[in-house]
Image 1 (cartoon, rainbow, N blue to C red):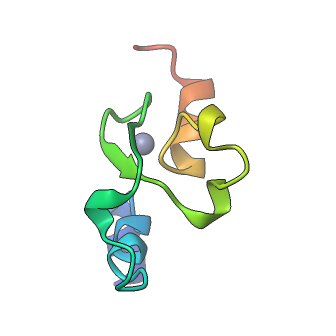
Image 2: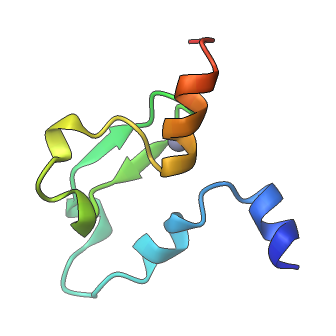
Length: 71
Ligand SMILES: [Zn+2]
């Protein structure tokens, strides 16, 4: 089942975003569009120091960006 989820949900962090502390509304977080998959993603704690440089929603997309020149 885990393998199935990995294959069909390449953005498992979205569930982590949904589980963020209640005092931070998801809609209040800065958002960007992933340059690889084109999907919006919200600010995450791990990006607090380099948010301006973040272009990808996940490490997976960062890798894909290097191996795929499309777009
Ligand atoms: Zn992405």
